[in-house]
Length: 244
Length: 364
Image (spheres, each protein chain N blue to C red):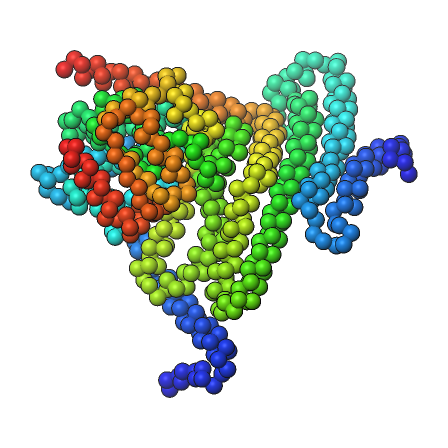
């Protein structure tokens, strides 16, 4: 079947669109001689695997859009009733925030895709580091054995292993590649958390609960007020001291 | 019951006998360890046990005065210690034989310490300005108690950075300034901590998390030697089961390491951006409430202390202080230890407090 062929079945077409970039990247994941995947190969695979979510989120957005439009049509003849429903909205009243849900879900799907890619890239980086550490430990053990100074006890073997592994891992942690990978993971996790909070914010609106942003704004204001009170107290103390 | 007959290893080949002997010895230590652990009391692991009284409290912040050891007529002028927001101040008083606080008290110090407490979600908005102002409040409290115009202040690590800011903006309130393992010129810091800090999108992190979890910061410290910190030191623990005091010291250190408060978000944001990423203090572009902090305004005597093997704050970063302050009475001392070794190493227990006490005495 041609890459861009459509069957007319929206779910099947979405599935094929998602798989299109994934399949060739997966083929390159394991090299021909069966060796472990390279970091870049793994990263490429993770990126394409993440793209799986894209078409589905688009489909979800379209589906919710249609549902919202149908809801609007049904309420067109009764604008006040709709406005009252939305203003007093009860839990489960999806219509009240229907417009926000598809965008939030689409954003959540995109963010989840990026997190998946970042997580897999990070794991690939760490897997490669473990492999290198293992090789280094074996190399060092062979060198010591050849020199007749191999560790004699389990404790000595452990000490050798941890010291060599520490060297390899700390080298990795200090590398630009690792710093970028952890940054990417940290950023993707932060974005994921924020998209979850956005969804929870929509839920909070239904129940008239304060959202995290609203609480943050209150917290900032209270902090500023405390600051001003403290400044006034200091100024008053200074005046009293001067008066003496 | 008849006494058990010890196993005769001589019946085995040499290598096997040696392995069995090691195994047997390890097993003996582990059994002893189980016994040791079972008999431990909560009080055995208490840290920061030097007697002290609460003299001031504002929210989570508390100021303690350590009970002086010498009679009043032999006491030095009061000294206020400003610790970092990372981890807890009780590292200065881990246990009686590893306590720079106790050694200072024995040398005549009249010691006060700021405990920043454990920030909660409401502290997310606390800024560096708030912390520097809080130092001012604490200085005033101690000044009033002793009826003095200016105070001797010892700032440690990040607390030292805040203290430098305070001393630069309120030089009339600081008589003598001691800085210990304080990062100053962040561009000279090539430690893993510094690299991670530079590679962080701190806006994203703080906007998302609010306060930055202490466990995240603690893990970054452990990354300096991950296998040593996560595996080797616990394997070595077996040997400590024969050393009761060594075991207690180890467990107290573990307790201190695990006691890692969250870092107030807004303070963390500026700490990373303005310091690690933009190195503003030495460039003269670091501001408090919009006003630049000028290290050149620090004219009082300074004693700068740092560890030669510090891999959390690079020695060069601390040593750079001399180039930027206005003081002509500048003394620098380094010690052959790392960051934590400055507090607890046997090498520094006598030398470091004595250095501080003698320096203060000469400027009394």
